[in-house]
Image (cartoon, rainbow, N blue to C red; front, side, top):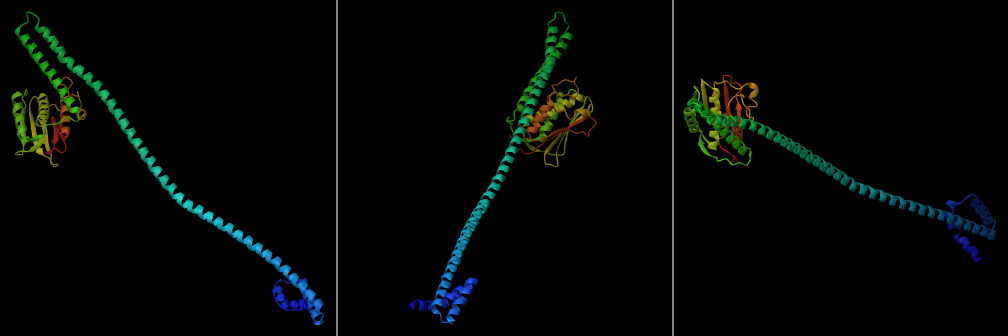
Length: 363
C-alpha cells in the first residue's frame, strides 16, 4: 500500500516531465491507467503508471544520453574549430610578420644587387678608360719615339756632314763660314729640341709645382716686346696694346713668359712683313685675356683643331720641333686658363688664351 501511495504522490511530476517526450505507446498506457483509476482498480493502475514511469525514465535517459553525446560532439567540434581558428590566426600572424620581412629583404637585396651592378659598371668603365689610356700612351710613346728619331736625325746629319766639310783641306773662307753657320743653326735646333722634350716631360707630371707669385701682366708684356724687337728676324712691326694701366695676376712668371715668347716667335717666323700685335685685356669673366694677332700666312682651318698636338706643324718644311704650342697648352691649362685660335680672324692667325687673376688650389 505504501508503494502505491508513493507512486500516486510522485505520478503528477512524472507525467509533467514526460509530456514533452511521450509517444503513441506512452499515450496508450496513460489512457489505460487513467481508466483503471476511474474504475478504482488502483493496483493495475499503479503497475501501469510504474511501467509508464520506467518507460519515461528510459526514454529520458536515452534522450539525455543522446543530448550529452551531441553536446560532447558539439563541444569537440567547437574545440576543433577553435583550435583551427587559433592555428589560422597563428598562420596569419606569422604571414603578417614574415611577409614584410621578405618584402624588406627583397627590396634590400634588389638595392644591393643594383648597387653592385652599378659598381661593376663603374669598374668596367674605369677599366676600359684605363685600357684606352694605356693604348693611347703606347701609341703616343711610339709616335714620340718616331718623331724624335726624325727630329734628331735631321740636325745630327747636318752637324755630321758639315763637320766633315770643315775638315776638308783647301776650302775657302766663305764655305767655312757657311758650314759654321749651318752647324750653329742645327746645334741650336738640337738644343731647343732637347729643352722642349724636357719641358713637355716635366709638364706631363701632374704633381709638378709651379712657382706662383704676383706679377704685373702689363709690365711683363712690355718687357717681352722690347726683347723681341732686339732679336726679331722679320720686317714686321711688333706692338703691344692695352687699355689697362696695370693688371696684377698670380702666376708663374717664367712659365707665362715662356708661353708668350713661344707664340710671338712663331708669329715672327710666319710673318715676313706687316704687323704682330700683343693685346691684353680683362674679359667679362674677370680673367686676364692675352691675344697675339699677326698678318702672316695664317693657319688652315683643317689644322686649327690639331695645331696644339705634339709634333704638329703648319708647314712640314718649317724649322722647329713641333712641341712649342703643345707646351703652351700644357702650361696654360696648369695655370687654370684656356688657349685657342680665333677662327673668325682670316688676315693671318690670332692666338688667344685666358689666365685667372687668382690661383685657387693651384701651386
